[in-house]
Length: 330
Image (cartoon, rainbow, N blue to C red; front, side, top):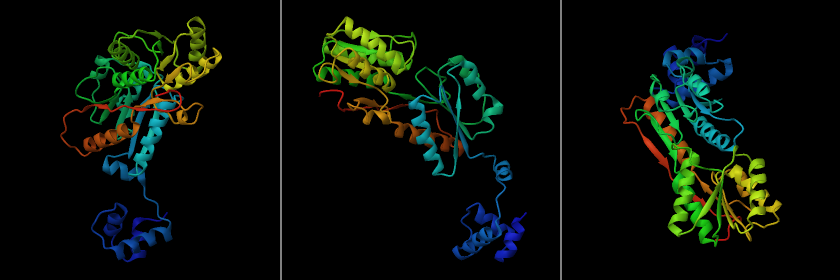
């Protein structure tokens, strides 16, 4: 096995100089750096990453814990995080919690956290007290709508404002009999509760009434069947706010199943701005929760924490915006 001493001898430099080059320290001239790198390549020297990480106390890996692997929202968030981290020479490891308290607690266990430089957790199953008992020296950033212990960094989506904007857009396009597919008041701050609050706020401000059609699962098949049945019962419904883009896909199909057209008879707005929404027919009007903003803020927070900066816990809300497409008229 080629050693660092072999590389130093081949390049005519000291072992310390080789170490400086491999660790990208700004102490080596360009000609010497090039000579060392050529020797590394010629001899096939490989850095012992395990030893390097033990010395530095860093793993160069960030953990992301999501409720489900198969949900496009989390898939797109993970993809953007992975690309951004790769640009800095780091890796993303994604775990599935199944939205259960047990799964989320396991991801936050001391043994698991030790394998990461920081952990990003989408909180669904755990409550305030559960998270408050967590003791770790590693940075933890919480994602989700529930109230969380203020000592942790916490990023939320602007669910209420986004849902309100979606509903106003339907009203501006002429809808007067509105339905929200999915949603409902869960009795505590959640994605479902906050988007329902936004839907109802827009209706109240416009002097209109609407209805919420609950779903057991936010899946296209469930939404399709439920919306088709509701429209057959009440064909006067002319605007539907779907709680997610996944649900919106089912809504579009349900409208067609009921013999109606989008957007001529029924306008439809989703939420999440998933990539497929631009390519279905008609294109899905949606609310963009700003994944790019979330990724930038998350990486900035964990980098500052890892660097040891004494920063007060950050509680941030991403700015949402409407993305109009063909499923609405205005």
